[in-house]
Image 1 (cartoon, rainbow, N blue to C red):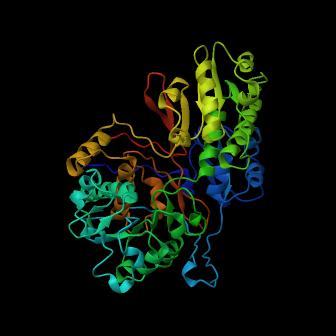
Image 2: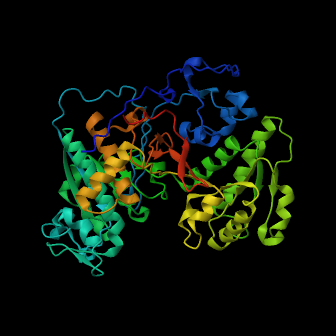
Image 3: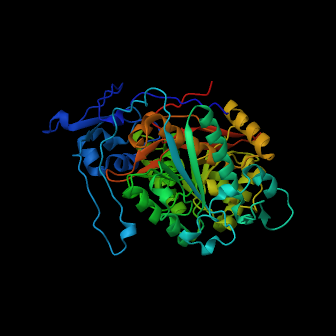
Length: 528
C-alpha cells in the first residue's frame, strides 16, 4: 500500500460565492444587480482565454464588466462574472443513435460532503486498453465466456514476460498472446493494479473489469455486455478515434468516462460525463505563451522564425508569445528594444551576437518541433551558450527528437510546459518505484505512473463522494506521482479537462527541475 493522502482543500471562488481578495482594482458600475454576478480572483497562470473557456463568456463582455483588464490580466485582480441560468439541454438524435450525447448545463456541486460512515459499497470500474490479443479482432458478444477478459492473463507475470527479450510475441498460461505494441499499455495496467491495491487496503471494495479495446468492432461488442450498464467508472479507451461510442454510452448511462492519455479529440465540449486528463495541445501552447509573458517580460528575447508549417499548433506559439510579451511590456511602460526575430538558416551564427545581452539572460523560443530545424537551432545555441547566458523555450515534443542529444538541452537550459513531471526525491514517488519493482521486477515507465495517478485519483473520488463526483473535483487536490490535476468544465454544457501543468527546466548541472505549476487554482499540500 502506497498510503496516498487525500488532501481536501477549501472551496474556490469558482463556486459562485464572493471571495475576499487583496486587490483594490476598480470595477465598472453596471445596472445589473450584484446578486447576478459571481466573483473570481485571478491566480497565477490564468489567462483571458482560460477565463473565457471556464465561464463561457466572450473576451469583450469580460473586459466591459472589468475595465481594468484593458491593461492586461494581473494576478490578484477581482473580476465580476455574470451568472448564467441553469438549464437542461439534449442533443437532437442523428442518423447514428449511438453517437447521441446528452449534454447538460449543471450547477457546480457546492455541497461536496464525503460519504459518511463506513462505505461498504462495491464499485465497478472498467479499464479499456489496446492489448492486441490474438483473435480479438474477430470478437463477437457471444464469445465473451472464452475471450476478452484480460484478467485471464497472469498479472504478476506480465512485466517479466515483456522484458524477458525472448520472442516477438509474449504468451501467458491462458494461451492469450500479447503483441509487443501493447507494452506501454501493459505498464499502464500495472500502475492501475498498484492503485487498486492501495485503495483496497483503505477499505474500498473495487471490482475491476479489464478489456482489450483495440478497434471499433471490439468496442461495439463490449458495449453490448451486461456488465457495462452497471459500471461506476470507465477508464479508456485510449485512442480518440474509437472513443465516440463509449462517450455516448457513458453520457446516456451517467457514467464518468476518463480519457487517460490522449490530448486530442473534443468530446469534452458537449459531454458532461467526459474527463480529459492531458490538456489539449492548443491549451498547452496558450499557457506557454502566457508563461513567456509573465516570466520574461524584462528579458532579452529572440524569436527564431521557422520556415514551413505556419498553420501548425506550434507555429501559433510564436505569434501568441510575441503578442502577449509585447502587451506585458507595454503595460509596464517598458520601451526597451528587447524583442528580436532572427533566423540562423538565413543569417548564420555571427549576426545574432549584436542582439544579445552580455550580462543578463537571453531567451530564445523555437516555435516548431521539426527535427531538422530544431537541430540547426540547437547547434547554434550551444555555440552561443559558451559565452552568453541562454534559455531555450520550446515544447515537450523537443525531448522526443532522437537525433538531438539530451546534454545539448542542458547546455542551453531548455524549458517547457508539460502535463507530467516525476520528482524522484518525493517520498511518494520513491515508495511507488519501490513497490513497482517488488511487484513486477522491473522499473516503472511514464505509462506506469500515469496508470497509477489516473486510477487512484478517480477511484478515490468515487469512494469519497459517490458516482457523481464531477462538481467536487475543484475541492479535491491530491499529490500524485507525476501529474497535477485541476479539472474544470470547458463549457456550461461540456465535460472536464485538466488545466494543471508543470514547468520543466533542464539545468546546466544536468538536473531536470520542476519550476512550479501553471493552470492550478489552489495549492496542493506536500506529502508528509
